[in-house]
Image (tube, rainbow, N blue to C red):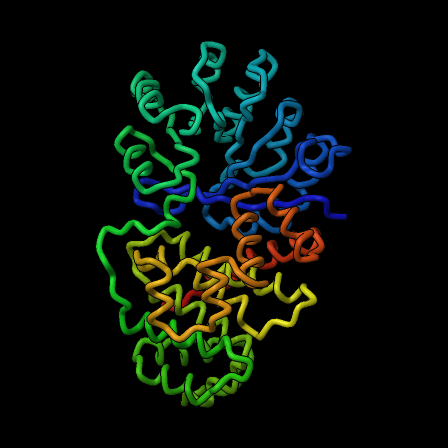
Length: 405
């Protein structure tokens, strides 16, 4: 039986490249299941989720995992390979001699140790030689105060991570203060450095996404759009010819579209949407837009309400266009032909599509109370929500692993 949610939040470097993900669990007594011991919950979550789903989707990225005190004393982290696991010591762990001995041992075994939500105090001084990363919640420890602490440790090998970075300004301040890594949602807001126009290839992608959201796909319209874009044409044929379903080489767009069918066509267009956007944006943002689209689609498929094929998918995909193009959503949505229900869902959180999008964003941010409320409001089983998230993460990882060049 699944009794847990898990979400992942990106951790980015100064260039906004993804270093890894913090895997966020619902495992405390305040979270819906008070009868489950947090230590037991963490063990179950590690085996159910980290091993079965998220571990395989981390790729070459690091997985940051919170461990309660007893899990550390029991050396639970050593059950997992050390190469892409960062062991986070929770802020409520007491800095005992027993914990210090375990931290020392894990450090010698090659595990990266992080102090989570760190508040500077002399009790933790003995731990510092064995710590790789110190995380400051900038809502609790102001950036300037953190900067003074980091200066004192400037000769050490410790790297510093700023948590709860919510705006681009905070990201810039934290970078200047000397932080190495950043966690938060600053990248999902437009930076507004300069106005980007909708480039022809990206405009084609947007029009294609609009076409595949319709109940009856117009293959002629799709063929017409693809044939006008040389890059898209090449990628379509390369994608179809690399597919296991193709026995003879495909030569025409129409033939390719017939072979692909609706599901694979959506997959292909999503993939090209990833590849055709601006290189200067964080890679995580493209992955998130695809994952969010798929997650919205899977949630929509579990509801009793009848949704047109592709509507929930497009709602998720288009909800990040402002971040990808550095322009207000309303302005972008006015320029493209998109269904009014999708537009209202994205800009006003209206209707069932709006409910799905709000639920998806709450899940991504691990706002579990809000997640539970929204599940009840739309009549969605909470176990189904967890399954949909796992499936969307796997689906996205699969897409990115076959990224066409």
